[in-house]
Length: 405
Image: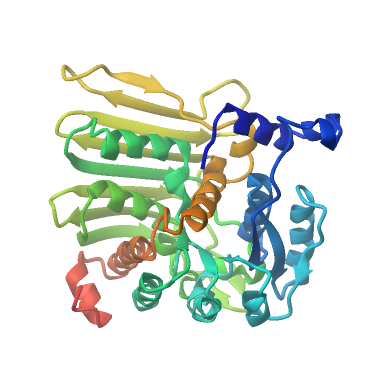
């Protein structure tokens, strides 16, 4: 799809509200095509509302309707939709009704993690294009079943591992995997320091049996990136972690919370690459970092939101080439309106890739098999924390009846 200056002038004019300055007959730069696709959102909580806003904001598709049994979520979804669209949302009474609507081209699944497997089994019967939030499932067996379903699915099947589209990681992918600036990558290290899990309807994210555990629910994003940069399958995982601060006294009708709020994870890959991930979910900020070390150079990228006054950089990327090539520093970012639309702009570009994939008939985003391996590492890490022992990935797969992998 062409994105020349004219396209972006028109596109940004519409997003910033300048299109009402002239009549329709005088619009040229401000003229825009009608949205081509219609999507339904299944699950209208926090992420569902973000997908509603971003779909309408991106502009090539609109949200047709939503299904969610929680009235408050539906009302909030209406508000999110109204920001960019005057057309009322269609409200469905069942998942099956939302999936089967003949006026809809795609489905965006944003329900709690443990429900993904059953909803996908229903959704694929429609043949519609599917974008399902991460983690794709809470267990290895379910994640593999979904990967198998997706491998023979005629429609686009994309998983919401949108951190690949964050500015710092997009640039890191470009430098390390496309330009090969660092040479052969040998070590991948990532860190996330942030606040505690937010409240959810039913508080399902406070219980490992519904979320998959912190290292599946939250950290699959990072394991997906580590897997991507390693360029190999994980061989062995060792992790240690605990519930040190958050939700130690939290009780709900579902029981007592049991999720980790900190962990250190080490991953060995079949090709000899080593990865590590450090998590602390009781920091008064949002900070994440990646360090890639190759046999030629080093890359470090970070993103920081600390809520302090001043003009501190929100993102940084440094490349060190020693005596091999020029070193440099940069501040990867997207336009403010895009970054503020969700996940620092990652959700916007995730949607761009989803719509592009629908248009060109081939998937151009994280696959269900990528999502499967991110779940494998997360489950292995949770298992290692519980046992205190390293986990061999081969053994873990065999325990789940996946000897063939």
